[in-house]
Image 1: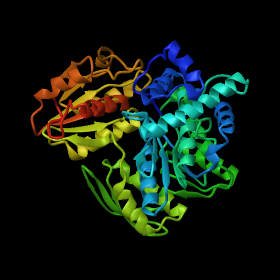
Image 2: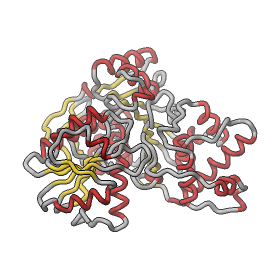
Image 3: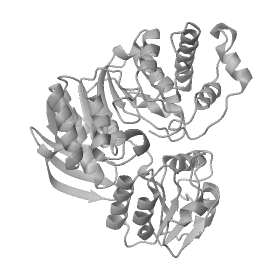
Image 4: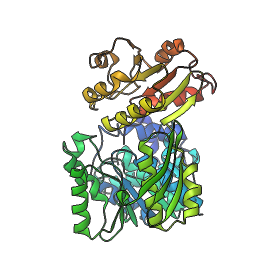
Length: 458
């Protein structure tokens, strides 16, 4: 989970206006987004714990009880796994909901029904219902304060999934698991993707502590799928599963055969209780394990092999090794922790070692930037350091001190970085990486006409 790509302070008059009875005003989509952002940065204002979200959902009539759930936690790959599970379920004829975070451009991206983002009109209606309920409960002394950004939008997702008659929701954890706002559901399947270091200030400084938080989504007797894990993380997950009587499927129990990798995805056969031909449309060798996790989860759910084979190739997960332009080629990647950067480095070395490589990089201050810098430096011949539009962004001048590289330039923001990258030759490749904020900025910039499908550098 990360913060919304913009922040603002809600004007006092708007806050008072939003408290007024719904009959006296019509809330617009920009109003709802502005108010949600005013609740604070998702990380800096995070309030781990289930008391407030549980009370709010009770006030809403428990919309979270209307659907079946696949609950997905982990450090890396959980969004990709969610997207592939969702695609497989839809191929089997299931009406699905998909809840992920963060968004890249618009908050509506976080809540999908049958593969489509919810409309701004539905988003606004859900916001109004959640906000009005929260205000009523605050006035009645049933809530101590307004729900946080993530609590509010999680409640909105539950409301929308119930209203839109969703059958099964693929629910991605925001931060950790045990105390995350999504952990109010009773899932019929839990999935835990690879665990690594990230958000140590919240989850603990050791893999054992982080794994303990992730294992908090496990429920008594409910089955789980575990991706391949580091031994110290796996030991914690196994111990907790045993305590709760959780039957576990390990992806390590499945074999990958006939593997073919290219710069756009992978093809392989997953051999386990059944044999599944997998065409993964998501780039990077690390996506093989993610696809295998999705296959194991879909098999556990009872999805027929034919639906798995039809569904996974349709999965979409933007901003992760996503090629968005040619001549020069531009690839977006939201890798923002050491494990993600290592996956990016492996991808570049495998598929782009023969080309001149550019890196436009921007990051948040709360990341392991010293370790990341050591992985980054050899990646590119040309590096442009910039700052995403976020109060948590590391200034490019500070990033420069972490990199030992002969060709580094500084750009105030992404538009300036793209201007510098005009020098790239048509057969060069440009990676925009380090933060999903930066990836979202590029996509928003492209939508406004700042980049074309043919020529990504304006």
